[in-house]
Amino acid sequence: AWAGALRPEKNPLRLLRAFAPLKDRAVLLLIGDGPERSAVLEEADRLGLGAKLVLLGDRTDSRDIIAQCDLLALPSDTEQMPLVVLEAMDAALPVVASDVGDIREMVAEENRAFIVPVSDDAFAGALQTLVGDAGLRSRVGLANLARQRAVYTLPPMVEAYSAVFARAAARTRQGRPA
Image (cartoon, rainbow, N blue to C red; front, side, top):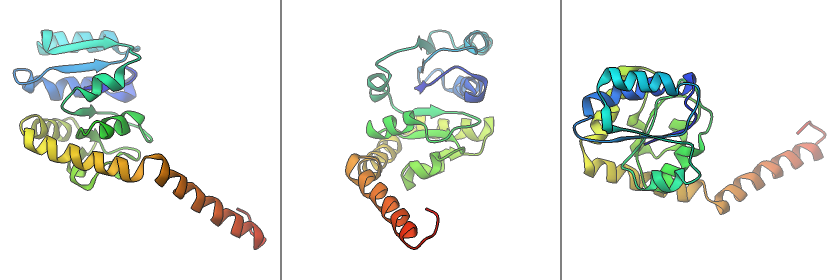
């Protein structure tokens, strides 16, 4: 699955090219819409994806859809800290993504081999590896779930913010800017 806005910087065409060799073994769901929709349809036609590509459009239930998938693919050229990665981790899914923004730091150590340089070949290789190995998908997904629960739930986040605020208050008391 992929979820987001169909915009050039999200590079959905990279995902289609990476997925094309796998079309006999998988189905690709695109959740979202945007200005690249016509380019996606043209590229899908050129690649012969047919019914193996499902464009779901904008949805309010994307998190539920992602939870029913085998992996999340995020071929973006730029990101910060994408919420969809946290949603995939919460669903015990592995993530194949371009190494942009905070994605590498977000996922579990076991998933970091699938956070790859921004390139069609690297992305396709990572996607092929995970599509072809259900056991690996499961192990990586469970590691992501454990990391999500350890780092991105309310108690550890409150603790982290409290530490930041305490350091800022201490600096202020010392007469230094926070």
